[in-house]
Image 1: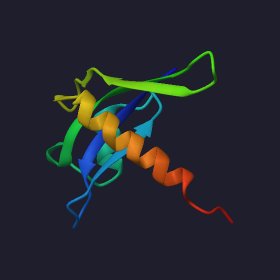
Image 2 (image 1 turned 30 degrees about the vertical axis):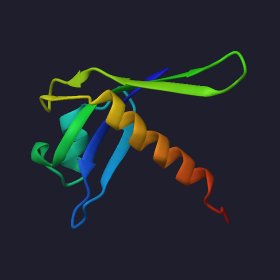
Image 3 (image 1 turned 120 degrees about the horizontal axis):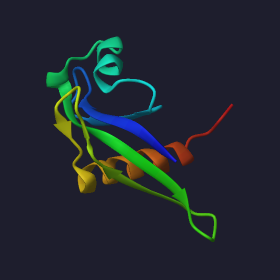
Length: 94
């Protein structure tokens, strides 16, 4: 399964964030709806999610956003996504 993603600088912060969204949404429209501009986007592209035979989820960042004219940075983007996934697993849910 493949989805789109963008990596951007958060307003008033030095942290990069990754946002993943469905393929049917245009990269530039998504960024605009969030109140960001293409200048705020560091990288953009696609993320492929797959399950291994053991049930583990593996993913790969690749490609580029034509509408934003931004390429993915696979190694860096993968690291940030991985960090976000593990931080979500540590959260307590009410």
